[in-house]
Image 1 (cartoon, rainbow, N blue to C red):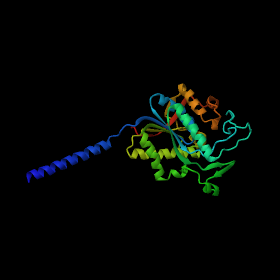
Image 2 (cartoon, helix red, strand yellow):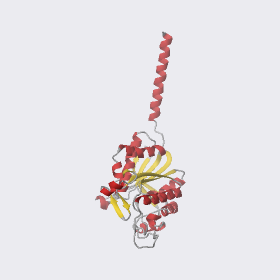
Image 3 (cartoon, helix red, strand yellow):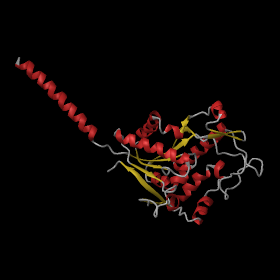
Image 4 (cartoon, one colour):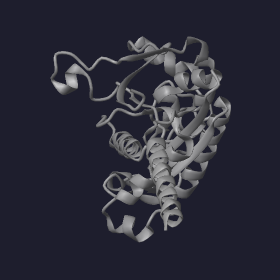
Length: 297
């Protein structure tokens, strides 16, 4: 009887010690990987959001993950780019008018451009394929909620604004964070002036929080301060000050080269875009961010 009792006790002690080891191992916070992820709503937003910072960290040995949240079913023209006055002409017929490209072709063009831009950085492109609230059908704009939108049922994941309230969609983005375990994730301004930008940022924010709760090794979540966080738009006397300032002077060439790959958006105007912003008081040599979440503390 003594030998039998001793054997059972040994098994019990071993099992208890194993449970303790597993518990302690689970409590140890693993460090995130040397990886930077920039999450842009559209195909060319990585550059405007943090192109210099992205290039700088990749040059420092970080793995770069170039994320395009929306499937870009709109926003491409066969003729001149309408968004920036300084843009070089993007035309196939020299027409003074802009003609929208159909949704699927637009998506294909902008994905190809994004892949080329990611290649400039030496980054991995990721396309989350969420829909935005309108797309082009010939020269006609098809808006979400209309019969035509429902009838044509654009290819892709749910509308990004709706996806933020779907747990399985938040999990989809959380899985991306689990895969790469980035030390730094950069997003648009939460609640920014562009709904697609704000929704893409909010989706990433929710996924980042969920990743933290699941003990995924993610580090810091930074957001751009350029959006509604200004005294004029918020009514505050002072805007929220960025706590991160990155000098990207030596990486503007890479940023502009990547920007040039989005010819359907900016006509390959490169440096002129940043010089123009500088004339409006924007210093392109410094990129600023606000720390939203810090899982390293």
